[in-house]
Length: 407
Image (tube, rainbow, N blue to C red; front, side, top):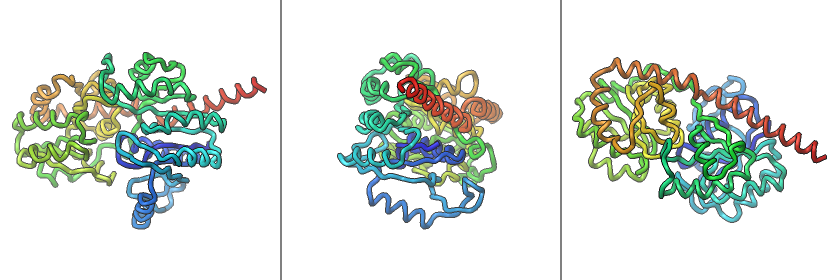
């Protein structure tokens, strides 16, 4: 099957990871993939330079040796779409982007167009483009939300859901990550039959328990980790304040993996003096896996989420996981696969839970085993891709039937 994937490669965020993992997996299954994404000429030149200096690893197609980018990006046809501004949250394309996108899709002639929505104006004109070209169109809607039963109140999440709901019906299918999100969009007027629930999936071979020297590196007996963006909605300060107030032992360390606008203001107050280490954004996936394999506990205190890939990666590596009941994260950890916290009392809960998990390694081992089992049951990348292939086939069959009836 020939698939045109429209998504992001930079800056790093959950959408970027999602696009990389899904397109790599589709290539593994012998599909043809074209990757259309926002990039400037300078960015592309930097990418080519990184390719020229990257190491050689096993080839995805035939287990031979081939060139691979440092970020494990798929090797497929790429189209760069020009933009005025791009961030982790939204993108402003240039006027030329729409024309270039249309011309590219006309040349590629894909069986299916799949847009991993980037919060840009192209998301709204894409259905019209694909209708004119007679191309089936699928969207993945990533925008985080508060949680089960929560009302969409003020803020970017409310605006995004309210803005997108009327347009999502113009896509052949909209993929969301949980039943909760499906119900939320349905309440906003999106037809339920147009919404497909396909959870995020993680490569459970790559992300798995294993040897790590990370504890020795940080001289830690017990190791806690946060991995993700450092932004107000991630609520990392609640974790840092709880850690400081809990007066953790000197041989317990907290690793903060990630970057973002909140980093500068937090790092100066919560530092190595309290056993807190700021690692910044770790581009090397093997290094991120080593960190997870060596840690005992993964903490995600977010106020809003979709379905955190970082959480799934931590679970797959066998970490005991503590996360707030936002987005689909609470659903992932329900029934004993982890500890689900309330956003209103997350700091006080962590103040109690952090020393508990520090002093009882048998508890973290048990929860880590349950977390790994949950991922194997529900959230593997293999199952995710199989569901996606079935969705593509279903849409193409519906199109074929409609065409035959029309004829």
